[in-house]
Length: 184
Image (cartoon, rainbow, N blue to C red; front, side, top):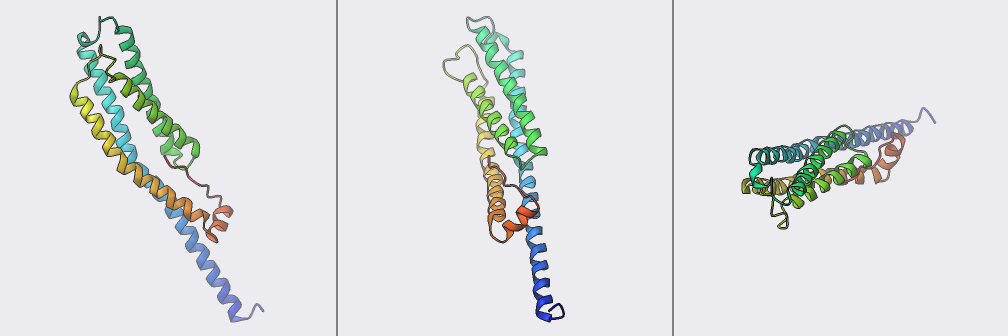
């Protein structure tokens, strides 16, 4: 049996298939990390914008300081800065642990908190804080820029998850401990 050509042919085809399937899984996993780079760049622009907003507020405190809601204004600014800091930490964790579910959930929650903090700061009821229109416009532009990058990242995750769940590649994925990734 071991001297049969068909036996060795089947073994060779099986080995080459396994190598190809393994390389595909590795390539798809690397593609997820690669697609996170542009998304990370856009997400970090939010932190830069927060710094510009804080700088604008400190340069023109007469626009909100000294009014009856000044303490509330400070709490809004503090909330925004804390949310930006947490978002930065979540982005850094996602950079190093791109495929982990906890990283994805942490980034999603931090980004949602940052959006909520910005919305609270710009809410019409918060009349005692004036945000320059250029910063508001830039935030809206970032919201538009982040969507295509987020979609590309999530598509890469969907492709990877589909690949590790397809039979016979699922056997290799289980053998080499390829875990499913979580979309944002």
